[in-house]
Image (cartoon, rainbow, N blue to C red; front, side, top):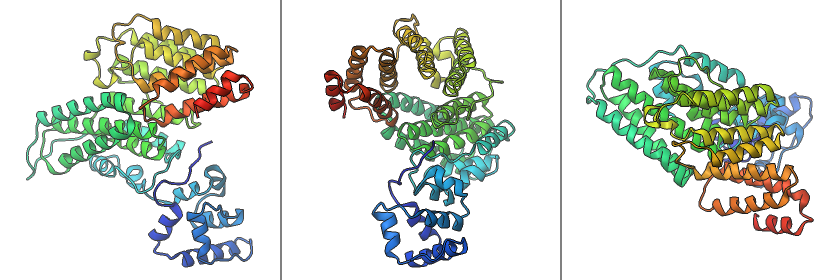
Length: 446
């Protein structure tokens, strides 16, 4: 189930009251009136109640929750789906620019400009399945960028070259230092690129390269947000990235964004969300990644036959790849090792634990001259999953041995996904804590 925890900065109820220009007493009076109109009877509306709800962690009574939802036009089913205060985020319109801007070049610039928001909605998705499907449909028909002439200074290929170089450095920095620091840098790139798109003059070719750079910067910002557990922010960036790839007239770049977006969706209980159309994809490594994402989606949905079909297709697509330098620069990490890790994770999800271990081992022993860069964060996640496979097969010693390696390797890695994977392993070991070595590990891993 998708949940939303309390926000890090402003409480959404405080934000709602401020947006409507209401004091706590005035807002609560409106809630009390709606409470009565719904047939729930009288409700006290002293302003101290709002303080308890927003600052003291008190959850309103059920009927009060429904009255608040009704006041803001939120479905009662969403009250249960997202909980308190998560469902209130549906009443905030922070996502309007990125979701509702027209699929035009101007709409793309608007969505790229809207790179942040005041509310940190951890674990919350902004796009419904229908909204997501509509975005993908519009992506395929959106108008591309044209030349821009005007009073702004003329920029050429050298500007696009510099952004490509900087973005390549950011991708590798993400592997090394983690999402937190790289996110801020990616947002800065988006702002620099958007400034040129809005104020400079450029040829059609340069304009499309700038939009492509904006798409990649937004894709990277979205990935960093996801790695930090901020799903709403991630989706905002992914949608902006998809728009920018359309303005760049680069379907392969858009497919990359959809593949990263799919990772978020299938880990948030939407197994088939954001899977890309593979037509017009020029990169074998991107094709391999799309098949790999589809394999994970099918495994999450409990569908072994299509999952393994997609695994085979991923390896087949990768067999057609040239040297990494001849492929899309962002695909340097797609290799035999990564595909075996995907196969292993799919097997683990499907309950095929021995098959999972075989693929985890193959990821370490395969022969691939292009598998030279091992990203620490991903390696830790896969190690934790390998420990889960050993545990499922009853080999507690092997699971603990790898578990200690995971903890040692996690030093300095800032990643909500990595922490979450270790939490999952600890939860599975809890049932064996009567064993001294397990109890010691659980204490050590706390």
